[in-house]
Image (cartoon, rainbow, N blue to C red; front, side):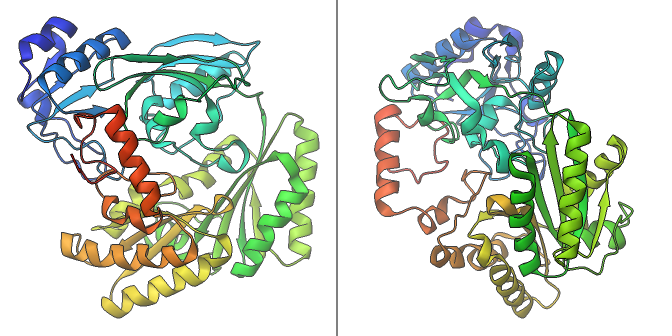
Length: 463
């Protein structure tokens, strides 16, 4: 550590500088449970304290790693003994809700679910929704440009942020807490920090855009007989439901069967012999009208042989049961252990050929290899889980090559919504040109010339 702990205690208070067992007892991500190895964890209470901590770190040339909800999957929160962790866990206040303007001002350490609940209490909604809603934080959502299950209707986190406040590497505060939908006065500086994974600044507060409520939720799980029918169904439901289509979440048979028939974690609402299963959700304000439109759209899809079976949720309990199969990541991890997980995007039309080729390559290399696929098909995003019998680094590198290399020719991306972190850094060039990566380095050098913020994440260190 290049900074004295006394200096940090003077800023945030003695109780909020953690060392020793108080650090190592914390994990750096939920999947591996690996212990935090940072030299210390500092827990500031507000932007001013974050700024003072960063000013002290800058003066001492002390590198830092920011922690939020620790639900990431690309090792973006890992810290070495020479690094300091700044945890925003104390910064969890919802500061203001503007019902007329439809905005919510919040501190970055606030869990996503609390923001959703606060918006609902005043008759509005915050539409970003993830399986980790109870633990992921708004700052983390911004840092990774989180996606989730409603991107098809509302877009990613970038579309939900009107303004934000960030602390720079030298302790300067950039406060751009814009509350307007339209503001073209110069550069939109908030975009520098959204999706930059804490490498350009530490987001401390944000102004979020709220949406009108959609109290009517129509949810169904359907089975499709082929990939052609699946893509046809996406087009059909988009046209039939128009702007009310809120989710189109697909599970390959290998995902659905594993979590229902194989592991017995869920009772299958539909037989497990079909190649694809989809959770379709329509969001609206008129329950009767939406229910009629939804059922008619499904009936039409059945007549066109786009689906072969369907179950419509008749209650919130049934709806939750359908979504539980899709969101049971814990069961997926346990059922495939040791599992290697991937998050990619590619053109929808290429998905079946891509996954079929990947499965063939995996089983040719490891006879007992297993592939499980699910994802936000309407957004071009697939989540891929692989069990090759080992998660050792050399095995992972082989699997990564099988997963990532084909994406270059398809115009795909090695990260749809999880970010790059440490895990995907060697593969960034697969989906970003040398000119783009050079510009990323230029921005990093300009905003963090000492390379203090989340060093080594996203970009290979060059200074």
